[in-house]
Length: 190
Image 1 (cartoon, rainbow, N blue to C red):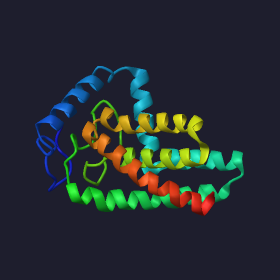
Image 2: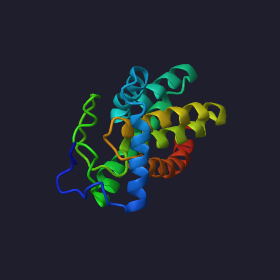
Image 3: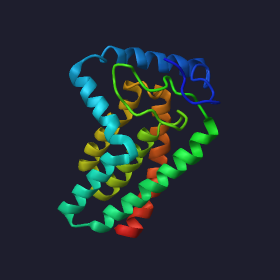
Image 4: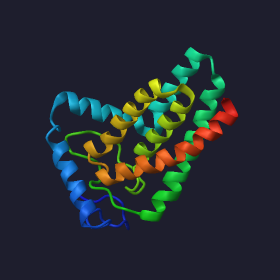
């Protein structure tokens, strides 16, 4: 397995030995699960559904149908687009970290991304969407949105398309942007 992003800073050493150790330890723990048919299916599916925030658009459409709040569907779609632009065309360009592999774990089929590794866009979008949705739905459903976000985020390290620290970075960035997005969402679609 080789680093993916041409001209990017290699993953090893990019953020220092403590982060390298964290990435290694998390990968070793996830390796204990890899090869388990249920875990492979869950995390690979979560990774696929995280592409282009599909899972969050589906959740939003379902919510809109149940709550009859089409305005929230439109607002969340616009906010997710803005978050993606900020992370994928802004933050990732600042770090240019290489991915742990060019196309993910050879045992698991995932799309090879074109952007650099840090932060994870899937994790950022997941934290962002969960934060905005929790602002509308409250804590009870917020637990569901956060759990779903966690599975999507972890899936990226599981399929070896991101370092674990990329996932943590994505969760932090997405959560921060989500707090801003929550305020905008309340103003636009109560």
